[in-house]
Length: 286
Image (cartoon, rainbow, N blue to C red):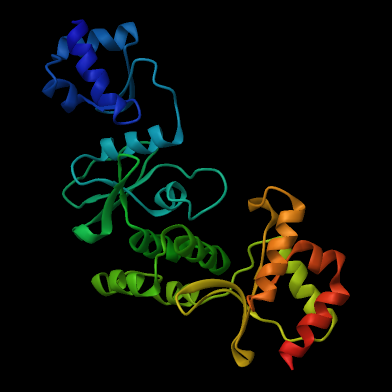
């Protein structure tokens, strides 16, 4: 008995502490033993046919894993749940959301289920041992229900975290031309997004002194840039203090970048020395 439970536990360990009825049977655990394990607490039913093994702790990854397992063969984490898991959306985790083949007619309380004829192999991958839609497919799935600013931020995160390009998203759109939200997604891919208080402070400084506003956080020659003025061919980086071990090292790095024609401003430049920053910037925008 101990050996069989060890086998089952090893399977569950690879799946965030979750295991299916089918996997238990394939591991040599008969139905009677499954029922006894449910009684003595070695197993806990999460969904129909899906269990938590032993004392596996609850987690968002475990909840999402259980939902995918409950969906059966071909099920993948998708939509807002996938976007949250991939770091494209902020805030509390959404409920489990999966996409399954149309032949899977199961309903599962607590799980949002989307049915499709098929998912292209290029639109599915494995991350953290969970089957999940790829970044382009996830963006396409969430587009219809997202506010434009939220979708633009998700597109920005896709670039920053995974270097997902508009061309990759367009390839996914070409495979799914009837999906809703395509126009909105294309707009978001080229949209501007403000990500930090420092960027907002910089734009306020520009407005106070009558200087033109830049485009923000856009793709420029293959790189995401903080601020760009196409008409002046000027790019400025707003450098964060968090990645430097001291304030002095941070300010020194900003000054070094500026001397090397890599225009960069810090919090101190924008908030503490705004007059000097405007004096430096104004000739560049004339």
